[in-house]
Image (tube, rainbow, N blue to C red):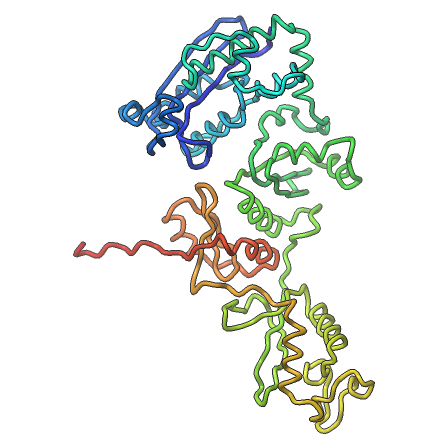
Length: 464
């Protein structure tokens, strides 16, 4: 009936979020290639409280798991029972994601080929609208001893697998499995087995060419889906075609969410300089306009390197430019559209008492020769720059953006790194400060509402 050993898996958990909730019970039905079956059930102390709603749903109470082992103590047994098997679960992303996160907390990498019986049921029986486990019980006459307990639900999934191999039958099931596992053809130089390893989680992926040269780095909410899209023949671009011919290895780094993926992508592109990435490249010349008060109402634009700026509420900055030329071209355009004086803007060397060229062609309103008050000219300049104004850094020091179990440490729009503990924060703060990056700023300013100022615990004194 099948070519490889199977593991029918179900978990009970404290909630629905794999990065913050925990497993309370594991149920596994192992089926070997020769058809022999073994079952394993284990209560797990989640280390956090089980909400009343979950207690009522599963029948697993806080008292029941109080003396159960934590996942760390059963991880070896769980890994041994799952290793080398096709991971089959109902809504498999849920169970697989929880186990991956639990193993990851212990520094263990867990990967397995996955089959979702929800998707399999939809493929085999498209005429039905509902494919939850209760619907399958009713539709296929499955026998449920204790719904919402891990082993009982794993047994139901195994029963469903056995029933569909009878009706609609082996041939139909294999056709459905082939349809579910259909994927774009990988370049011939890559191991097809990598498809089973690619995670369906947020993160970044890295394509390498000959001699381990980085070719391309990308981000994704679903790494597996995004990587495979590069090799989809029905919409392959010339860029993807050229890239696929060069790839020799694929790697990836999972993140807690989309923000982490964005920040990790920007940092990796700048440090590794992959040949196929056109954006997010390192730019040492990024600069911004500030305004200097010269007195008597005159505000003079001053071009400064963005790396030297404190983006505080007291110092307004306008625009981020790749070069001095780009910044100057923008200021010239603003002078034309807002009737500003080239001399007062520093775009033209003026001669005292003589009008600038703009005034001679009736564009400048004459602030350079006293025909317009300097303060009025300055007000128009500020108005012209308003659309370019950068978001000020709103805190006196570093801030955190929390995402799942991780937190991104940021200071003055510089991404310092991602942490999971206060010790990690201290290490990042002690490290050398990364330079300001335009692309990182563009990512972070969209999430300023999610930031919280960093508050570290005060170290205990000797008296304490």
